[in-house]
Length: 172
Image (tube, rainbow, N blue to C red; front, top):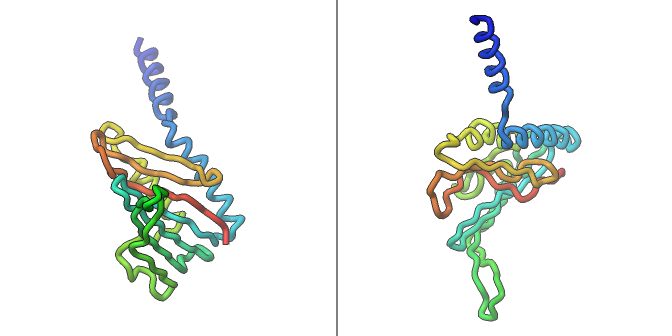
């Protein structure tokens, strides 16, 4: 009887330990694609982080990395508006460029992170959020690489996403 109980407990422990949720599997797959891209591009690439608000504000930050080191950051923020003809458009509010010597001079814009750091932050922070208190998201629409890693607190209505949204990753 004791042996059966121990065997049952062992089987349940192994099955529970091996179970992964969909975000873990998607992350692992995406991370492997990233590692291949990183090697193929010699760790030289650019990626664009997007923010947006239901209230008509948005921004794009392009981070440029060469040989694993950030060398530039470009930022533009805008409001969305309609022309008198009813055509949607953007009105630029702020725009700047930082080269290697000026990195970090502006408070606005996405954080100065390499994609290695983005993947680490995704795994340890955004995807690790308490799933009882948050809805967690992970998508890999950039040819299999990370495009969204975030969480939204349960019950939040507008602009509550905590994480990152990446629209483009390209080799230099």
